[in-house]
Length: 237
Image 1 (cartoon, helix red, strand yellow):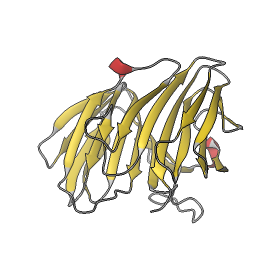
Image 2 (cartoon, rainbow, N blue to C red):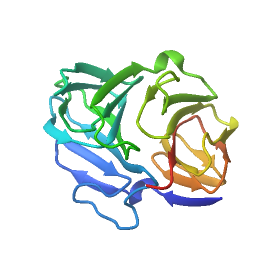
Image 3 (spheres, rainbow, N blue to C red):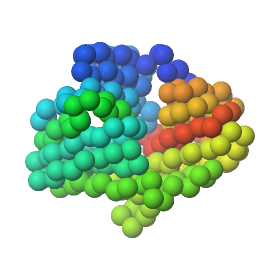
Image 4 (spheres, one colour):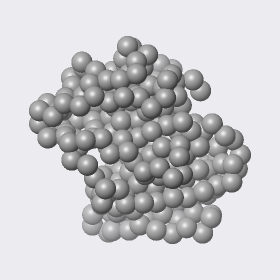
């Protein structure tokens, strides 16, 4: 088993006033050649957007883009004709494929929005762009792993063009579980959204991240009440 640890305060920092973002991997003006990606996991941005502000219309292509709101609301519009609000308890994915444009705005004037935006390099290029949004809170599994993303259209959660599986773990203090990887050769990047946990023998605090690979399973123990996002991805880009 191999691991790589990224503390919360080691992440890249962007402060644009209306937007405050922490970058686990190189993004925008933050570049660290040792932190470009974890396998096909290219971006984990921990974003805070002030009320009434947001990202104007901008393009993407050939990337799987996942948004997970942590608090507040996020209004989405895109060139495919989609317009919606995503909230805590939802997950949204866009397969950018041949190209899309979209905007993300905080529709509330007085309530900030916090969300994770995650980019995964796809295993198919130039696919037809697609959009998917579901509520995952209804199927939450306390003290167990809840799958929220996979490569399979008929599986639990959203799906993407990649052999990746995302799971949420909402554990009470003291809960211990073993996570078994879905595919040989994949690795897991664990990101602690709330609380503290021990993952694969490494103690993690809130917003810390740990990449784990060269294993087919790993142990997770909640040191406090904790919420952890597990992102299982291929390690070869």
